[in-house]
Length: 99
Image 1 (tube, rainbow, N blue to C red):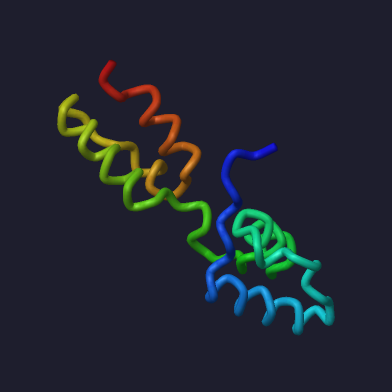
Image 2 (image 1 turned 45 degrees about the horizontal axis):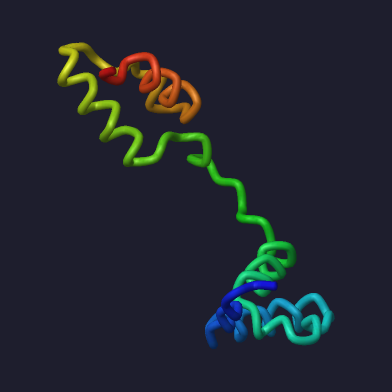
């Protein structure tokens, strides 16, 4: 038995879930608006996937900034190909970050 009651869903969450339900011709499950986590999981399961774009595989700005900071500390350059592939950037960071 949980010690605390689950948080109720926010109005924005409920409104978005209702829009998704209407678009997919489904009804919201009974009582789901009483639990924020359950409604969030329902929304994730029923929302459309994010469109794939040209830059989806590029590293994030935080990754780039972190890599450049490491490169300055180690007095070396980040390889150019790392700026076009988030996996390569991650591997470069893991291999070069100060221990």
